[in-house]
Length: 241
Ligand code: PXP
Image (cartoon, rainbow, N blue to C red; front, side, top):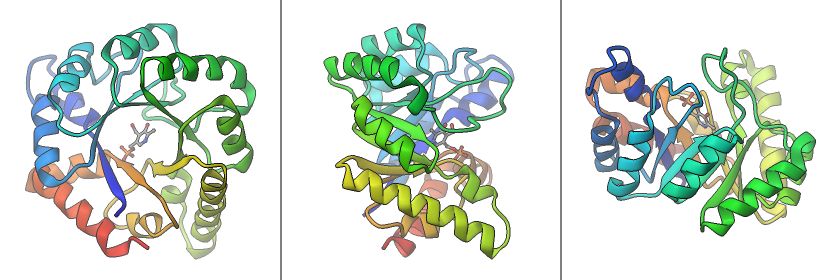
């Protein structure tokens, strides 16, 4: 069964709109778990635009499913990861001006420093995932750098329109996923997935986890987070190959 990692950053986005206490992402994590989330994901950005240090610390103590911390490969956040020890860290690129994560980490050009970070995180017992574009060269570089998992960036697939372009993006994901599996890593995918486009990704051979945030939190406004997560789990279950 393909697992669902629920990204709750945008619950914190609403809270930060007033810089108050509600809605609390810690409550959101409980609701997501009750809806069937297999992992909880938060991205602690350098600019702290949504998730705060306190959220990561409390979630680490309270989630009943593994916590996946998304972070840029920078010293400050690395120290927090090493102190908090989430089950898993996903290294992502980060730009202050971006609305959301735009592309995958370029592991090919930073293999040595990334390998150092992976080693430190492994030393703390943390599994490490690389969020990369669907490119076999990036997959091979991730393997060489010691990553345990690769999360393929599904954004280009999600944004593609028309059967031809969608097929091209899907094929890239399939081929890169095959390489991840051939190299003995875990195959994850995420970004821009929603209730309509998740099926074809859930059906990719041996994809392990899908990481989804915005679509679930958006749906939750109307039907509640627990039900929104349950619906996504159903959409995945219907299509999983
Ligand atoms: N995976 C990664 C690495 C991400 O950075 C994000 C966005 O924070 C997601 C998955 C979830 O993307 P979306 O919110 O579009 O579902």
